Image (cartoon, rainbow, N blue to C red; front, side, top):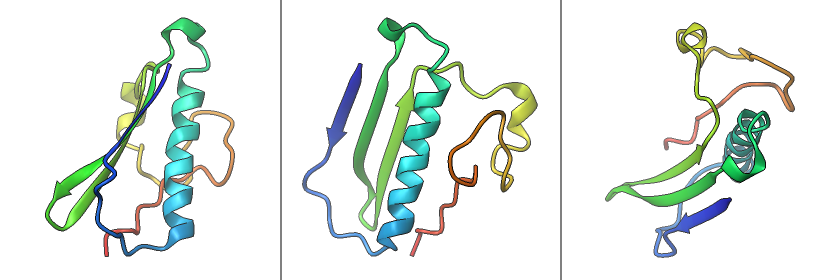
Length: 98
C-alpha cells in the first residue's frame, strides 16, 4: 500500500532543488529496497510532509521493512555505508538546512 499525506499549505522552501529531489528519491528507493523481501500484502510506504515549526518543514518517508539492524546503527550516517546493492552513491546527504 502506498499513501501520501501532503500538507498543501506549505510555505516556499529555499533549497537546492536537485539535492532535495535526490534526498527524497534516495529515501524512497531505500524504503522500497527494505521491503523487497516482504510479501506484497504487507508492504506499506507512506510519504508525509508537514511543518516542523514556524521556520522548518518536515518530510517523512516510512516503510514496513525490517528496520536497521544493530550492526548498522553506529555507521548508518557514514558516507558510502551500505548493506547491499545500491543505486547512486549510497549516501544520504542532508545539506538542505539553510
